[in-house]
Length: 443
Image (cartoon, rainbow, N blue to C red; front, side, top):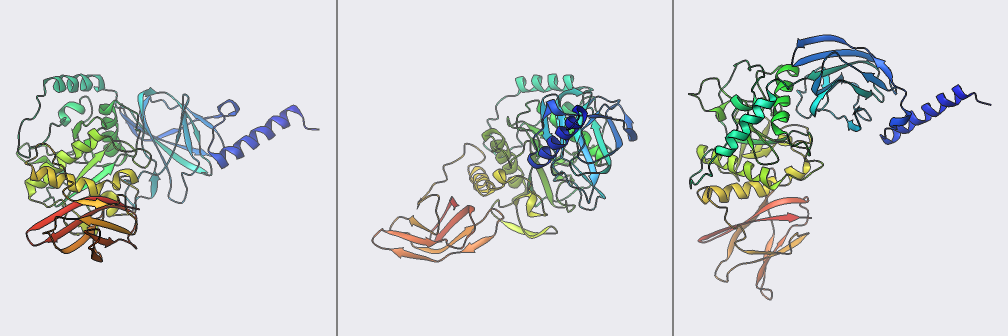
């Protein structure tokens, strides 16, 4: 017969095995050990990096001598984040690799966890990880309240833009949101932008203190990654607020021409825009997409770039003028739910620029059915319009010629789409004296 102590140990072992299989966290059954870390770098009021030695499949309570508003975990390249999680209060955070880390790094960094309020401790479950683990702890509290107050004051004063030309939308400058944080090191490179690269932060979809989120990302990029400034040129919150990102220290230079650190180590000729949130698990808000369209339209109009075009780039020989992070390297960024919208966004940007960046025009200029389509679709045109060329452009900007024929009974043109991958496409129909475009979804 098992003793009570042996029975308890057996129960704990079974529960830990269940955690590995399901990812569930039985809080009441935890048998956590205190984990004493040693500081290996940082020693600043806003950043500390601490290292520990752990055993796999064990629960640890970590109480660093540093209150933190954000946390990232660093593990060996050969290890995996699968099944690894952090518990703070009643919230469990499954860890995954940061999609923006440099491929040449010796270690792999987790995505940044950001918290509304400073935290003093957390529970760590390493799953299969064994050996050295590092915690990057960030505290962005200094000046946070003042930054939020300044933002609210500016928002109250901001007047609606009545301009009918493509102007830079209202943005929140670094001088506001970075209040109380260390200044970046102004090591900057100017670049001639030919591509707008869309990202997601892969963070929380529910956090509404966007100033806090951006401040923590800034410290993560500068203190943990060691970059001279935040990696993106602009960041857009779920409520549509546009944050200025990497900038020149000299106001004589255009900030949108700063080369960032966001596109697969090949950042020349790009401008990076990050939408806050995780768009593998959520759908972007209308307000954030509207800001993305306005900001991108301003930039492309300024540079006389075609939003539907593509050109060669060191990261991709056929990179769209508007592209996703994943079009340059192996990453899920900007999240599947945002990535599939890029075809629509290209069309919206084109229409917005054509309208003088006033009210968006209705894009449905001819009839396509059924929508969504699978294998075959019909296009109805005025009787005098005879198409000479029909093609489809996918979310990456790649064009596909398609077979089409006239159905006289239906008084329409039939287009074969069998063999094309599912996703969002732009349909273009050209003929003598007319050019029509329509966005559509192929199943």
